[in-house]
Length: 160
Image 1 (cartoon, one colour):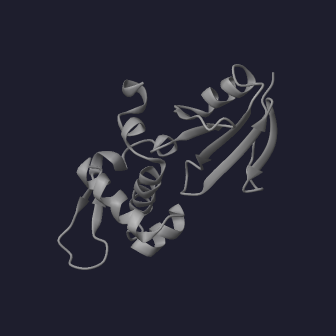
Image 2 (cartoon, rainbow, N blue to C red):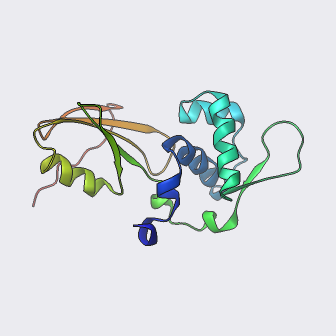
């Protein structure tokens, strides 16, 4: 798993991944780094949580702190700018009705579990758009799609 997806998949929380993604996307798009309040709003957390996330991303050398006093002053370590955008800091967190929680590496893993081993359970999947910091929540009940947030989420049932 580490060879394919990288160590960030294992050590970062979903919030930290979304904070990193916001910085990476801004830098790739030639935009200024997001402010603390912009990050908090985009990720859906408090500013204190963003500060903790930034400290962790600096500790793991994904972001580096600049010399500016006041405000937010971080830059993305260059090797993360070149990552394939669709695989940056992805997460697929699963919560069962029993309260058990775990993560899987890919959306395909989610689908295999929901249609197989977990087909008789209620399964909530917390995810995000790979292109932004938008959160997605999909609920399956006994293998069938029960709900999705936001309502604009495009969900492919597959088949062949």
